[in-house]
Length: 80
Image (cartoon, rainbow, N blue to C red):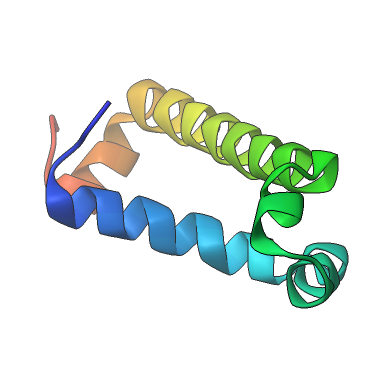
């Protein structure tokens, strides 16, 4: 699935930032050949953790936003 180019960049940048915080992944990237690193279960698990963590955070924000008219007004000038 391809999103708008600027959206893709933001998503990739956020994912990369989160993965760079994982010292295990950083060490594997430094010490392994690219194909070996790309096959790493640690990389796969790290990407899944970031994606699921973001999904959970976005669901919570949506629930808070949907349940609170005051929050909608404060954020975007929604219903009063």
